[in-house]
Amino acid sequence: MCCFISFSFFEAFLIQVSSKGSLTGGYFNKSRSRLEIQKTRSEKMEEIAVLEEEMKELRQKLGDVEAEINKVTYFIAFKSLLAHFTFFKGCVRNAKNRDKK
Image (cartoon, rainbow, N blue to C red; front, side):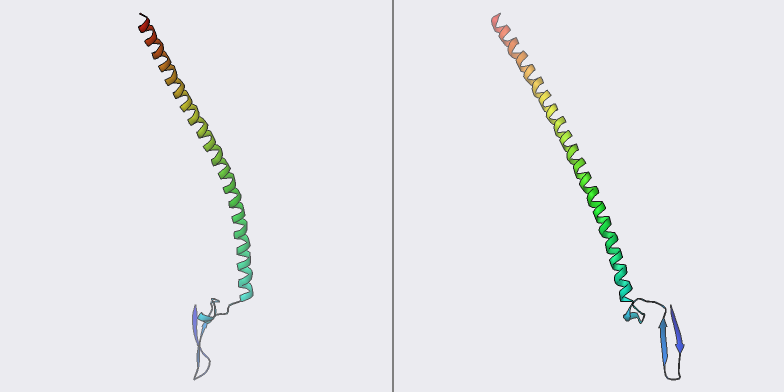
């Protein structure tokens, strides 16, 4: 917001009701700004700590899921290998039986 106010015949001042800093002509309270920055920084550091802990837990869960997937995969591979072995064992028996006849 701006107001045009004339204080004398020769001078006119533009007064801004904003406190956005020296470039806009407003007042900039550096100490308050630093306190706000420090407060925001502290809040963000706390958020980061919480999120890092959550990420650590999720990585652990991911590791558990990957281990379970590996178990299932190995089990399936073992069963498949066992089935093939049993099938071939049966084929060998049948072949031996045919050869005996």
